[in-house]
Amino acid sequence: MEIQTNTVTPSGAPTASSKGLSSDFETFLKMLTTQLRNQDPLNPMDSADYAVQLATFSGVEQSVRTNQLLESMQAQFGVLSMSQLAGWVGQEARAEAPVLMDGAPVSLVLPAPSPADRAVLVVRDREGAVVSREDVPAGGGNYSWLGAGATGEPLPRGIYSLSLESYVGDVLQKMSEVQHYAPIIEARGGSEGTRLVLRGGIEVSAEKVLALRVP
Image (cartoon, rainbow, N blue to C red; front, top):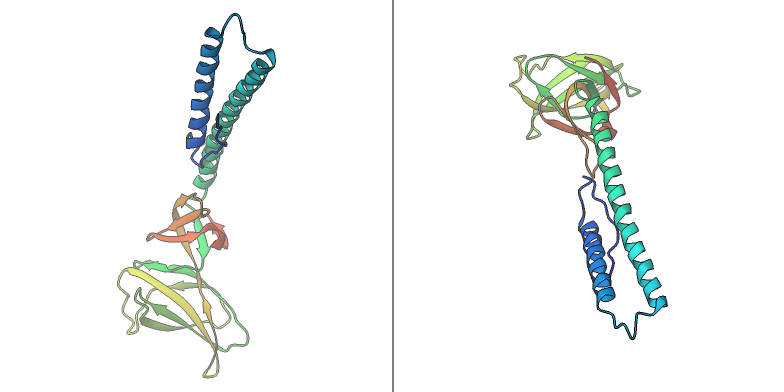
């Protein structure tokens, strides 16, 4: 009789292997009962064979119980994980990610590459086209971006990518990513790790989050 291996899915639901074990367990029990009922009284089952079958029976039963225990533990771990993820929702995450501009100022954290005596914030739309270039402090640090376009008019509501160009004189020295703070509206766990959904539907990996703060 073939006995399948134990497997537990991340959701804690019974797997094909655990179902197979249960099926094997029930089949073995029926076969053993039938064998005992129909054995020849003049030629009864050898005691050694009977002991082997009982040992097999016990092993299958133990495998089924072990797998059920693992499934129960996995389900409990899943609940614990979700409760931990819930603590992320409502906080503001700082990460290098696209930005939702909807008219409200966006809190940026500008890098401070050295040497540099001038820095320019470059704003691109979803198609990658530059829609604004704005002089910002070369020393880096916190900066409130108001979302002005190239002509000074407010940019349309949408998702934008921000980068920083650092210059010495007129010579470009470096291009850097810009970090910003955004509210976390959802936290998801999965095989690829924890994913956070920021305002505007922007997704980032939890590993990319550099800081958290209460809004």
